[in-house]
Image (cartoon, rainbow, N blue to C red; front, side):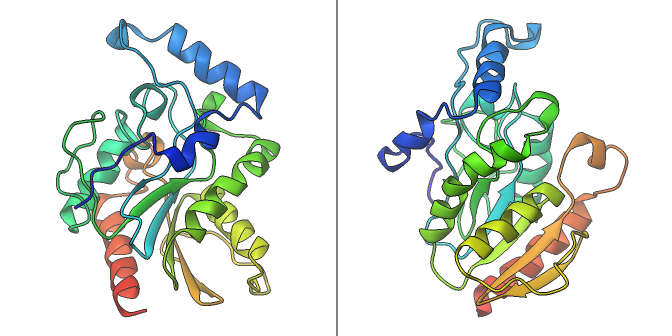
Length: 230
């Protein structure tokens, strides 16, 4: 398994990005005024690169880092409740070597999966604006272009699902008509790629039972089988 690393030279332009003033202000303000439980920690406070196995054909696409999760730790889906839920599922299906993702250097390694996001900076209220998603789309497109084909994409939530459709359309793929709509467990073939969907592993979904470990693991296993046979 390959250990994720957040500062690859090839992502230097992403890490230095300041295209969205609202997001830059929020990520840096969050770092200056952390909650008491993180007082004294040095925050990453930059856009987050993707992580994982770049030889994989399976990619998970999230929405955005959390202000005191990835924005703090410097690794996507790391140090917050959403990441705890996600990595427990990834470990259960054999895509991660451990069920937790706490900080860089914690021993986490991924195999057969790559993890990216539609927006790379922590947004206020966890909600990036359309123009911010537009600014970030080239980074998601670049992540996908680095992967082998065909690809199997798993969108974590409706906004990530839409971001995937937009990136694939920009690559020249014919998007089915009517336009695919987000639904947990949905699957759509787009060109030579497949796009699957699951609810986002946010506390809003996991605490209410909208998304359970079993539901997420089922989608991951379906995506793994498709990636293995495509």
